[in-house]
Structure formats: C-alpha cells, structure tokens
Amino acid sequence: MKKLFIIGNWKSNKTSLEARNWLKDFQISEVQDKEIIICPSFTLLAMMHAFIQEHNMPIKLCGQDISPFPEGAYTGAINGRQIKEFASYVLIGHSERRTHFKESDELLAEKLKMAQAYQLEPIYCIPEKNASIPPGLSVVAYEPLDAISTSGAHPVPTDVANAVGKRLQEEQHVRYPLYGGSVTSENVQTYASLPHINGFLIGGASLDPQEFAQIIQNV
Ligand code: PGA
Image 1: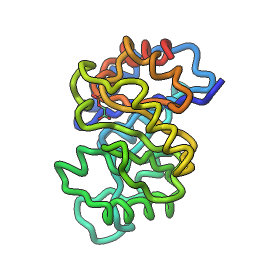
Image 2: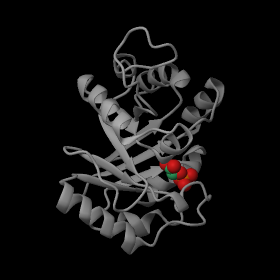
Image 3: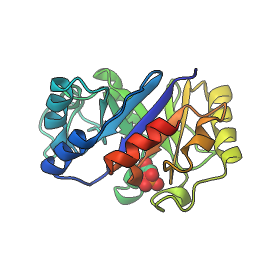
C-alpha cells in the first residue's frame, strides 16, 4: 500500500475554541500508511499540540509559513525554532502566499534554508504544472490556481494531476507528489488511486471534522 499524506490547510480560519471543538469532533479509526497533518494558524499550534499529545491522536502539525530569518530582531516573524517546538512540517510556496504576500522564488529559497536548519519537513507548493522547484524536495503539492477555493467545483482532471506527479517524480526526484485544489470526500478516491499522487492538500473541506474524517476514510 502506498503512503498517503492527507493534509488539512486551515488557512486563516478558527479561534482556539473552534480548533478545540474540531479536535473533539474529529474521529477516525484506520490511519495505516496515512500521514494525517493539520496546518493551523500559529496562534493555535501550542493548544493543538497539547491536545493531540494528551489524547494520543494520530495527527502531526504543520506551520503555514516560516520566517526567512533566524531567531532575533524580526518583529512579527515566526521562526523555525519556534515552529519546531510544536510542528514537524512547514508549508512553503502556497499560491496565496505568492499572490497576496508577493513571495518570490528567492524568498522561498530562504524559507527552505530555515526549514532545513530546524529540521522541519517542507511541504512545497507549486501553482503551475511546469513550475520549477528547488532540488532535494521530498513532498511537493501541485495546486493549480483555478482549482483552489472553489468548494469542490473545479478540481483538475485526474490525468493532468497524475502527469504532473509523474514529472515531479521522474524529473525532479520528488518522493511524494501531492495534489491540492477542490478536493472533497466525493472526489478524493479518484485521485488517491492515481499511481503518481501520494496525497492531498485540502483547504475548505478540512475545516469540518466530519468531512475531513470522511476524506481519510474514502482514500
Ligand atoms: P481548497 O484549497 O481545498 O479549498 O481548494 C486547497 C489549498 O489551497 O491548499
């Protein structure tokens, strides 16, 4: 059975009370060969980490961003050392960061260096199928712009997602190509069975604990 990453990207959503309720309502039984990861806002990381430990839940945490700088005089930035206290992964290059925060490939390269320095596994996102990626990445998510945030309406055709995954594996030596954009419990199985897709980055559908659990059950 191939390993599948099932990653919920909560984006800029949820208060600590809402996050706690999500954790209480999230029930899954079978997680074999599945790496379940949640990317919450930084304000939620400490509470979620404690809750997950206390209840022995099969969930890893992921930062939604990382400072391109180390610890020090960088007001407002969350650095790798701080993230590592609670999380094992970090998102880098999400299209919303590229678009709304004008993040360039040069900046992303600095963030990658920081992830490496603090042993955080980067989940690197590309918004186009031919986007170039830095060498040495293990987990890369293809998230075409048109498919993101359409509440399940516009996922890319499965053959396109599979072809991108194949290219990432064969040309860029990416171990785990992921797909993201409008993934729901209804369509997830069609992607999960593709030979070159090893999991999903899920936005809107991860906000509801029952729907996210259903996605995990359906793959
Ligand atoms: P979506 O978002 O699942 O809401 O389309 C995916 C993402 O942006 O990671």
